[in-house]
Length: 559
Image (cartoon, rainbow, N blue to C red; front, top):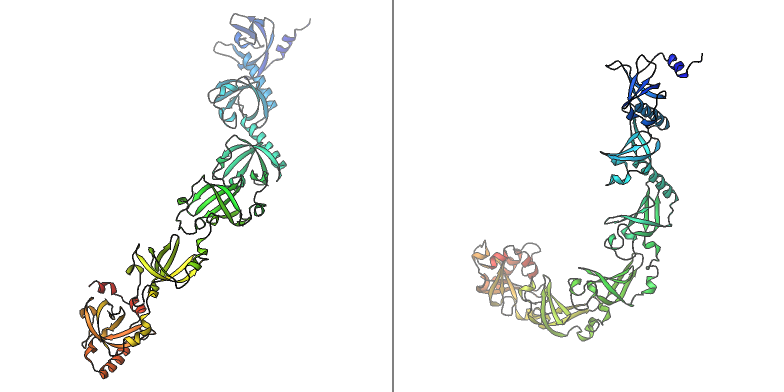
């Protein structure tokens, strides 16, 4: 008698292990359950909902099920058709891919933290692994099929974690390396402006970024890269340098065009007149755009022959269209020096003829400095009176002692330097130098009357009738010893004194108050004693050095 195949199979099954796949026969189909016999001492019930098409299940069908439990509390075998299908799919998927491998899947639904992807079994795609930049709307991926990288497989929990981002990054990396290998200096390529900084713009060249430095954007002046490009712009650039080890690419925009500085000397020779627009004004000058990529600079010193311009903004402003003259060109440094005063004749070219040395002039004191006074002879033409040329007789340490701003003065032209636009003037030269005839006017032994005008630590200066000054040394004030000058004399006090020394070469006169009543013999003796009392090298009436050594001059003068 023939044996039924199922009975033969069941008769051969001796051991049943929980968690394994077994075959069974449907012995009854109920409204909610299907009773299946696997050849064990008891049958198992499987919910009809677990079958793909419950209406097609009928008695006698052979099905593969998962033996979950040998016996439950009712003594029945616990079986699952759905879990058997899942296990078969899981085993199949694990055979197809390992961690690090790729697999195709369809996005089933959006779940918390990411997407659920069907790859034969359900796998999880975290939101951070969907794309290089995590998308805001996950719904747009549902229903679409992609390639994924298997990041993690958990056998115990039967879950799989996927990544689409890693595949995109790998693809970009491969494409970047390919583009980098093909990149050569001198190539012209299209790119997209990706980011802008103060120093330049980053341009995406098929997945790899290149730097377009601000200095390589234009032959002309650029204050910021945003003046030429903006994010998203499609631009054509030249590859300047490729560093494959560091994966750095330098790009240029201006190099696509001819350098306007190449023939600049021929186009704008020195001395030629040009016209341009002022693009920038700084305190020391103004920058003028002559053409695209070519700018020249007008220094404040080249703006006027006669006016002293402190700031360029006092004369020029950005946006002005002006004419100028080319003064100098430095092609390698891409610099052009311009001038606007050269558009007019230089009035200083006529000064030597108009004001030769010896000419008497008059003018107004325009400015005072420590070393002299500037006198405006005519508009824009100043002469300088040095402090040493103010007086023959008075040692002037600061011109403010004898002059004030705005004062009208007479002077004599001493020297003219038109190249440097300088004229030297003298006020004392209006008068005859009294020291030339000093020995005829003052002789040793002469008795004179004068006024104390200055006190120092070593003596007193006496103003003589002709504005000359003589020095009374401290030892020549009194027969008694004097410790401090101010104890014996006061500024403004009138005194009688004798001349005990006259030196026209050194321009000094020595006086003695105590010798006013001396005889000639006594005068000669006092003269020798006076000279012996001085320190080596000390000039008794040398106004220049005496004033410098006056330590308490200011205090004494105010007594």
